[in-house]
Image (cartoon, rainbow, N blue to C red; front, top):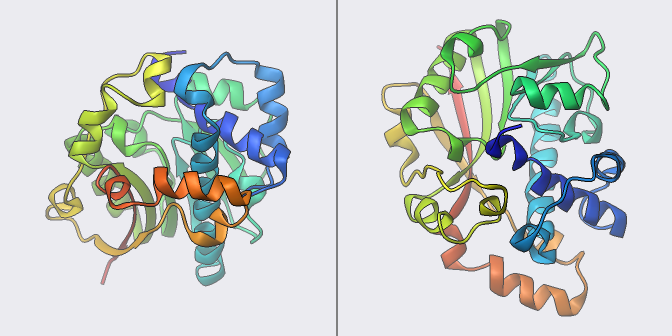
Amino acid sequence: MNEVNKTLYIPLYGKAQVSHKGIILNDPMAEKIWAEEAFQIKGKSKSKWLTYNMAMRARILDDWTDEMLTKHKDALVIHIGCGLDSRCLRVKQKYVKWFDCDFFEVIEIRRKYYSATPTYVMTPMDASDPEQVKKLPDHSEAIVILEGLSMYLTNDQLHNLLAILETKYENIHIMMDIYTIFGAKMSRYKNPINDVGVNQVYGIDEINDVIGDLKYELTAEHLMTPERLIKELRLDERIIFRILFKNKLYRKIYRLLELESTQI
């Protein structure tokens, strides 16, 4: 498994920890996988504050996916860069079909814990390879989750990914997290992913620079540390967490965007 693939263990650890504590995210599968994989993480990756932050990001994406499925019941759900995440189990709404996509090596590990069904498919895919992305099924509508992915793609690669998705789906709803250019630069020196050997990531200041001539529209920017989830922490923890993650500097580093493209 290469260094980028190893980064999946950082959010997995976070989800397992908070689930065990009974806060933010109920994720027994993360607890199970973490216990069985026994991957050794170190340094910043084991920070309690980071585990809360990773779990909050996952919870926001869970809630958004449920909201989208409520509004768009016939849409495919496509999670690109799924890692070992169990969102397919955590969401409350039923789905027509769910595709979890990641590198071949990641999907091989995933198959130890998840089973394919008529409505759930695991697909080996390199998001930077247009020919592999084109193999996704055509459909009228798709809900696309790009969690922890954009920062490993160049702006051109991300543009190409969005362009292919636009050709395959008439209506697309996307949630994606991004580093800013400043955030990407800072990540070379102080980021949990450094602990598994990753030092090259990419940032975006204006998403429209990536969208270019595509028909996507930025419809919302979401808080990754909402008060409703911070309140699940202990009182003393809330103060420190707010200082670390609920400030203007954090948004200058890391953002969560919702995009939509509708073919008329």
